[in-house]
Amino acid sequence: MEAGCRPDLDLVMGADKKDINLVFVRQGLRSYISVDLCRECPRQDNKGCCGHYSPVFYPADLFFIRRERPDLIEYIKGLPRLTILDFSITVDRLPDGDDLFRCQFHDPQQGCLLPVELRESVCRHFVCPGIGWWEEDNLAEWNNYFHHLADYEIALNNHIGAEMEKRGLSLRNPDDWDNIFTLIDELMQEALSRREAWGNHLPERESVWIKRRLTFGADWKL
Ligand code: SF4
Image (tube, rainbow, N blue to C red; front, top):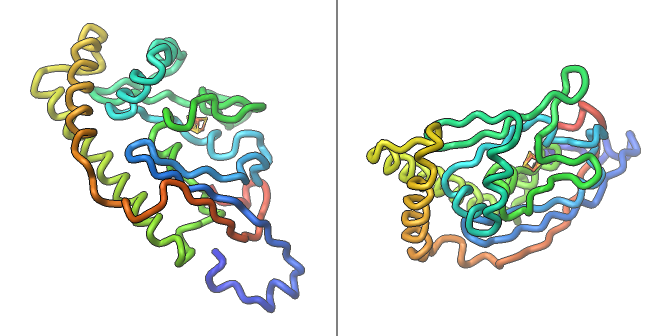
């Protein structure tokens, strides 16, 4: 968004730019990006991107949730609207006003109620296009890292899904859940024991500041 923006135009319009803090955290399959702008989301609707998204939990997510907070599996099972497929659980967003929605984990005062490490990959990696951090040359390595990570996670989940299918297991069948979790544990332990070399040149945590001109309401791109 900043590329191609003429400095003289900034002066003519008197446009203010805001300093935005992004923190990149590299911790393998639980890596994430945090953004301080979410606290005062320019959408000004008290939910921002979480008003548009229904998180989808795949086997790798279910593994970490069960390992860290097994109670959350029961909590998710009890939520009012779910779409359960063979190897994914989508927590469907709920209506929230006229033509509006809200993620079931989003609280207007506290934001996302899930610990960041237990969110699914879109929720851990997503930064709104209004910020567009990937346009910054000095963040190209982080961009590569998160692309690679997303591809790796998809391949890993597909692998686990294929192994479930071979054994005739599906999340659609509640009687299969115990066997599915045993299989997920085994395959995830295998995956975690393989040391992936990529990304090791990056710090485990990096805080950066970038400037962006804000727009408000529906003008702010999500
Ligand atoms: S799980 Fe959390 S971050 Fe993801 S859409 Fe829901 S409230 Fe937002």
